[in-house]
Image 1 (cartoon, rainbow, N blue to C red):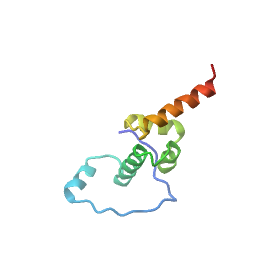
Image 2: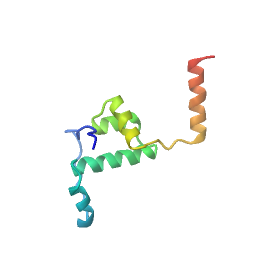
Image 3: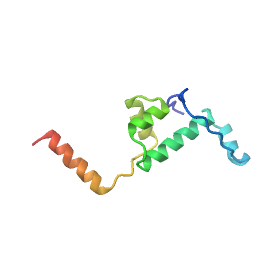
Length: 98
């Protein structure tokens, strides 16, 4: 499994109680359970449009390019409305010119 950064040292610690049958899944993984949960949380918030790519990188300690790879590897796309996508396209066309 790919390594997507290390947890930040100046971060909040959260304790989660997981039923034994779910905890068994973590024992099969090579990654630290806390980091897997952080990645899942970040992916969910990004998909909901509540985290930017910059915030994803900051939370996971990733560079811009590592964030892009992480999001691509997890098929993560922000929840953007059709109207917002159209507005973004129009703005891009203005920047690029005729």
